[in-house]
Image (cartoon, rainbow, N blue to C red; front, top):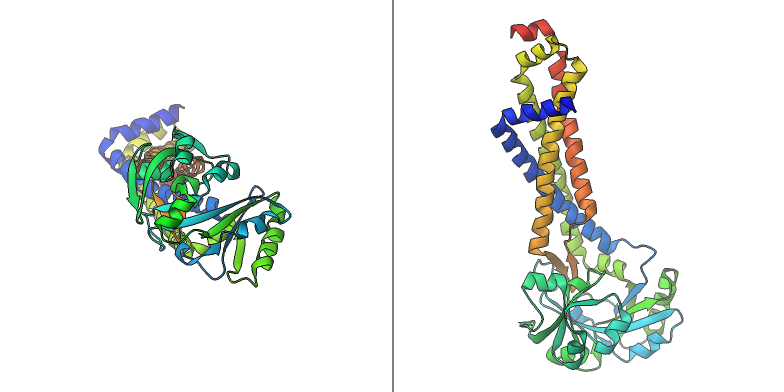
Length: 378
C-alpha cells in the first residue's frame, strides 16, 4: 500500500501529463466499450441456448416484411401440430427495410392474445385495458419510447399509421423493447394489406428440443399451398435475415482492436516519459534502501492507475451514453437494441487494467536496469 500511495503521489506531481493520459485512455476505452456493447447485443440476439422455444413462420423466399404475406387462416392448422404451445399471427409495418439506426416497427397482433402469448410483457406506464378497448391504441416498448420521447396518452404517426400510446411496456425480450404493438385489424387496414393477411406467425413450442421437428412439420403442411412457408428458430431467423446489420457490427471489431492498441501505446509512452524524467530520483530511492523490485512495482502501479482511471471514465461514459441515446439498429423489420450490460463494464475495466500492466512492464525494466552510479551521475 505504501508503494501504491507513492505511485499515486508521483502521478499527481505531474497533473497535466497524467490528466491528458487519462483522457486519452478514456477516449480509447469509450470506443472499446461501445464496440463491445454492439458485439454483446448482437450475440444475445443471435446465439441460441436451451431456453429458446420460439419459431418464426415466414413466407418462403421472402425477407422484407412488406413482401411476406401469409393467410391468417393458417393459425388453427399450426395450433393443432403436436408440440405447439402458443401461436400468434403478426402483421409488421416498418419504415425502412435496410440497415438503419432509426427504425420504427409496428407489430399488429390480436390484443386478447398478446398477454397469453408473452406473459413477460409488463406495462410500466398507462394501461393494458386502454390498449384493448381502443382500436388505434399502441403499446410502445420502453426503449422505443425513450428514443422518441413518448409517454402514455401521446399520439404519433409513422409509416402512414396514426396511433395513440396506451402504455409503455418492458420485457425480457429485446424485440419487445423496440416496437409498437397495435391491433392486428387496425394495422391490416392502415397499411392496406387487407384483413386476413399477416406477415408471419410466431410459434412457441413445449421444449427447445422440438424446434426442428415442429418447424419441419409446419413447412411440410404448407409446402404445396399457394403461400409456402419457411420456419426457423427466432434467433436463427434474426441471424439469417439481418445479414447487413451483422456484417456492419462485425466490422466494428477492428475498431475495438485499434482502440486497445492505441491505449497500450499511450500508457506505455506516458509511463516511459515519467521514468526518463525521474532517473536521478529513482537512483536516490535505491540509495536510501528501495530495492529494484520496489522501484519496478512503483512504475507498474503508475501504469495500472493510469489504465484504471482512464478505463473507469471511458467505460462508464460509454454506458451513460448508450443509456441516454437509446440507440437501436434495425434491418428488415428486426431491431437490435444497443444496451450496455454488466459484462461490458467488467470486460472494459479488466482490459484497461491489463493494458496498464502490459504498458508499464518495459518502463519498469528500464527504470531498474540502469547502473546506480550512472543514474546518480546523469
